[in-house]
Amino acid sequence: MNPKGKSIGRQITLSITVASLCSTVLSISGFYLFYYLMEVFYPRWYDEPETIMPSGLEWLWIGLTATVVVIFATLVASRLTRRIITPLNSVAESLRRVASGDLEARARGGDTTMAEAATLVSDFNSMAERLSRMSENRVFWNAAIAHELRTPMTILRGRLQGIAEGVFEPGPEQFNSMLTQLEGLTRIIEDLRVVSLAESGHLDLRLQRSDVSVQVATVVEAMSEALTESGFSVTLDARPSLADCDPARIRQAVLALLENARRHAIPCPLRVYVTLAEGHCTVTVEDGGPGVPDDLRDSIFEAFQRTDVSRSRQSGGSGLGLAVVRAIAVAHHGTALCRATERGGSAFEIRWPVHARR
Picture 1: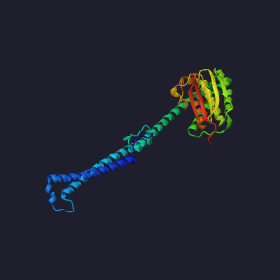
Picture 2: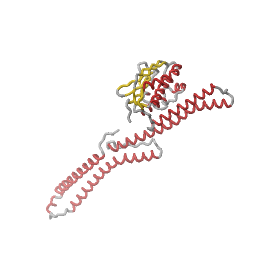
Picture 3: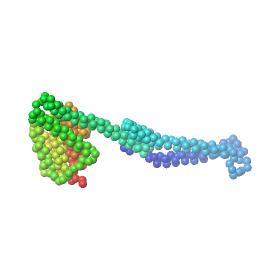
């Protein structure tokens, strides 16, 4: 944000110009006033012998005039200095507080007519706000990660302890249950790795020319049984669509979108389609409801964001799936978005350039 106002250079130039003009006017007016008063109250002073040097009264008046001019110039300079120094001192003090760990410190704007000073204060406050949010997000992430890992670990510990104490009979059912929890842990760790790498800008892609429709069809086929058991049917509309991408990452993103629909949407026909238009490839997964609230569509792709926490817990969602989708889309220099559909549901899509940026 660039606050409106005059630059410091223009303010200084204007102040000096005004001070100079006022000083000149005061000096000239002072001499005119002096000679007028002398003429009124001491008319015979002209009869005194002329001399090059000013008389005593003239020296006194010159001193008084100079004193008034200096006081005026000092006041102007002092006011200008305060307008410049006040926001700088505020920023310096706030910087020291931030350095000591007080991320709630904010600089005071003071006189906003100084464009550079106002911009400095605004930029510092924006930086401090971002640092504060980052600190809050770090605390939230630590708590969320601990919670997501604790649930499967608690279940695994309970199963193993039960088998060790003879409460549970060792058998395929118990081992399959523990294997399911291990797979859940593996998925959470992999999702965390992808999101963390993406946020640090180190999510590497193995780009190649690939038919995106084939990758999507592979994922739909692999998920068809699980979707059917959950009451979903899938309609795939995917024509041959060649684009530069990392096939493994695209499959991972599509899998996350289908998992998201399976866990959070009501049982309904799902529509999955791949399109090529305007130099971009788009993969869309559309469900039939219940939809995403308008105020959450922009934040739905953030990590650990849920529209219905209780339902997410019951369905086993970790809150990382859509964050992974966005991370993969951004790594492809694309976008991920959520929009409402005519059926009352939501359409989640990822879109990226057909030709990769090398």
